[in-house]
Image (tube, rainbow, N blue to C red):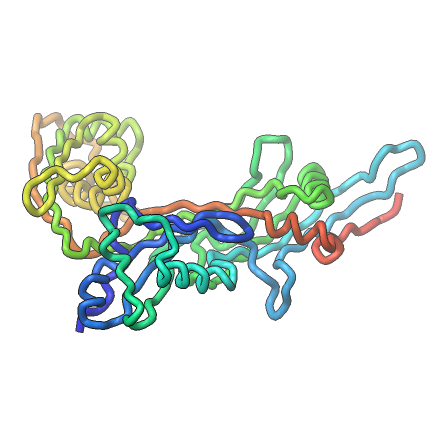
Length: 353
């Protein structure tokens, strides 16, 4: 019996609008849906997290967000409260709102959706007599989290959190933010105005895809001297940084063709350029020529003389492939919640005059 392989690689997805909060959901078919359907097995679809949402408090309907502010009450003749500082705690999740997965699966089963892109259309192949299909998240192998002020206004906040977030779709990432007076005032005022707080939360996800039946040939040509100069200029030592530097310096050239020798289309080529496959292949090719191994990882050779060498390699790309996808937090749910009952989310401690 065929087993699901994973979401089909590439930029093509079925894009469906969700409800509230409003954002688009990208759905990828399993690379083996044709085989699964022929074997009368459940076909499978994968949703890609499109945004980061505030989580709910454990066992409660409220959002997991709290702002505690220290303030002095206005002095006689003073126009406003004086904020001294504060702390903000919250938790985020990549999970979809509870009703959305059911709605997405119903849309797929009824075919009440726009026509999928041609490259993946045959894999949205549910039939009324077939087993109920499955809807699962795109597999995530790494989640790098950051939190900072959302703009350049003169506010200071320090966020404590785990930089390596949960790779489970329902897992929570928790944050503790210490705020100076200006940041405290801005967060409090944003909550009272029911506008998003000045917090920028970003999750960079490493997601896993599969090439399915496709087998691509990659012909690479690398100018070692030019690539070395680009890496020295950028202090590039990771596979992704080396690849970016080499592309910018025109030190790396490649052609990607399908199983019958036709060049792939531009959008798929661009997606592969952003994937982990090409940077990893290039790094493996040049590591011995440009880098020394050290206790802290690879380091650029310091005594490398120009060689005039050009490396050429042809390799096959098939099977699993990873690509990075960045999503940011959205606080629309909080804006609606504080309109309804701000006291559940904001506490201002008055320490007197």
